[in-house]
Length: 214
Ligand SMILES: Cc1cc2nc3c(=O)[nH]c(=O)nc-3n(C[C@H](O)[C@H](O)[C@H](O)COP(=O)(O)O)c2cc1C
Image 1 (cartoon, rainbow, N blue to C red):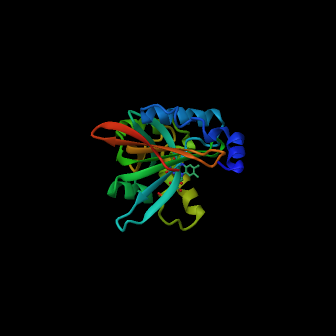
Image 2 (image 1 turned 90 degrees about the vertical axis):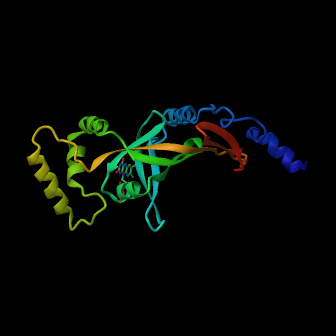
Image 3 (image 1 turned 45 degrees about the vertical axis):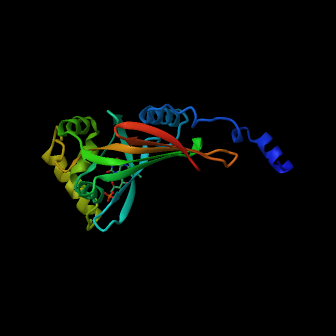
């Protein structure tokens, strides 16, 4: 071993020591919850923001940030406009990915699987809990379609404010998707540059995990 490597190892405990990746539980959902809670505790900005990637009929991928609402029954739930660019792509091709990046902790989680629309009653309940401005916005915004001017959007917002003076019902085009993963991967950056990865794969109804080269 060179003198340089000897010194490097001495200065980077993570080079030889087991770390966060080894501490991950065998259940990938417990592993996600562990890291998600750690991201919240570390005050990562918008810890629940993730990138959703979808693919269209021509196999063109597109990505955008959205909020994870909850992890329930081993499914990652988010809300959006079903008629939007992403909504249309997901209805056409339910295979999608979610990506979380928590820079302070030097962590990334990649999630791949299939989405489906959640029960209308669950979307109703969540929509009802949202602030009035978000509810009216869901009606007013024809998400992803061309907008002639901001005035057009404001006019629709005002019109729905008049139409729904009290309770704002959930628009039929707005609701949740749940992504049921078949693959999750956890990446832990290390100061030594020997980063770590653990992948979980669902095979015959059983989750198996393995380390990957970084
Ligand atoms: C921090 C952040 C959070 C967002 N959360 C959501 C969300 O929960 N749902 C949503 O539909 N769009 C959300 N957006 C907007 C999307 O990134 C995107 O612009 C919008 O959904 C239209 O995407 P599309 O045209 O690909 O369908 C968020 C954007 C940012 C930057």
